[in-house]
Length: 116
Length: 116
DNA sequence: TCAATTAGTCTAAAAAATATGACTACAGAA
DNA sequence: TTCTGTAGTCATATTTTTTAGACTAATTGA
Image (cartoon, rainbow over all chains, first blue to last red; front, side):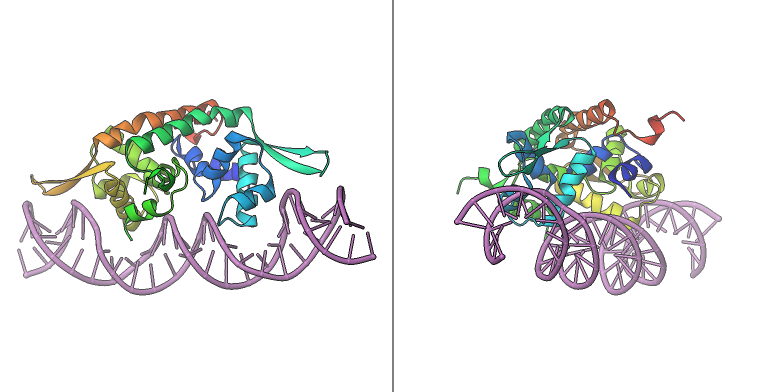
């Protein structure tokens, strides 16, 4: 079953599909990295500590299926593949910023922001 | 391990904790129902088709742990318990609205909105 | 030609989330 | 005192998500 079908099938409440899409174990990080620039498979595997091939591959595929990331084959030097935020993906940035803003207001914070 | 500890432990990116909190199978629905008024356990069990005691109980506990819902013991007629959106919970409403807005813009839509 | 890097897939196992059904405990009504 | 409704818990299954590790296949560099 494709990601699309899953969401078309039983999606009672409007925000739910998007929440589901964004809430995999690695997808928020991947999205945030995509905001900073193009992504590459092995790069993600190196940068995201603890992640494994399979999960990265699935996350990329789902984000691509939703047209949040564009997959581009770069026919250069070392022929490779790049994932870039699509326009739709870019329009998600403010949504993320609001989620971050809320989290900082309340203290659902991240460790790297905590001084030790 | 409590819900708090889980999120304090390894929360690399700011929006992640909130996404995780909101993305359980029933939590978005529960939150949305809470926007309309106080919730009660058996009421949710009746209203949310397909949900079971355990999941409702866990979702309520997590939303309560995060202080998004307040749990109130109502010492009236049939002594019972009500869950209400806290101030923090209310401040989440615009975040939800933005998620919904994005979903409607793109077509991550819900079935009830699709004409057939 | 051999080894490394690229970007994955596949199968199977482990872990996490959800579901099922029995059970508890209290209050009020019949 | 038994039955109904309140709000759960608990142990156990089932389902879903994530991981580990072997494998593929094309390109590139030495």
